[in-house]
Length: 309
Image (tube, rainbow, N blue to C red):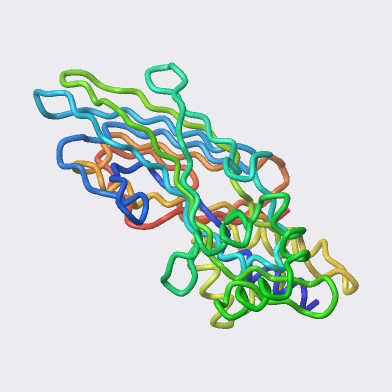
């Protein structure tokens, strides 16, 4: 039971993806910037466990074309926190681990992914590379290379606080990975630009238990973060009624999406639509923004969805 509870707690920090933003390539990597000249005229966001599709309509409000870097950042993934969580990449490529696909005005556009590793506020990408280690948690060679690390390499990585080795084959990477897709884009003057991307999200896997329905600080915080109303609460209790004393948990998946980076564009989102759905008809889906259609939308919170199966 304690192990399942730990998995459910780790699930709360599952990785997400974010709205597009302008960016610059600085010495430390991509830096998100604010554009006062380009407006997000519309955003249509559809979220399921199997795919996230985002359709934008951007409008350059100046009389001249604007060329800029556009970035789609994936929030950080803490490898230490995720060590006990069943979490799978969306795609087979360890770098393009969400299988990101981009079109502009209906035409495929290539993007590049930047992958970096951090620990306690310092970048450690180069240090990992010196020891032949990838930054990505999803690289097939990460754990074999860690287990085969010679004693001097183990000592160096342990001293840097990047890896913990235990007896036997247990090894725990402790850095945080950050990834962002980016491409160069021209926003033409005098007309809208349609940008669409689709990817397979990294979905957190865990367990839903009675403690999240209890009148405790933890339960109240979880329900508030997911905007659990009386109807959703009744449906969650019905799910818990299907459990047994021997197996008192229900499978739970989580998806997150950072909406607030939309504030990097000029003004509010002209027209915003969001639809969140499960891939299973009997699932209970809870979250603060599940079915939204609004004009002049200013997101003031990010999307956190829990799906109890």
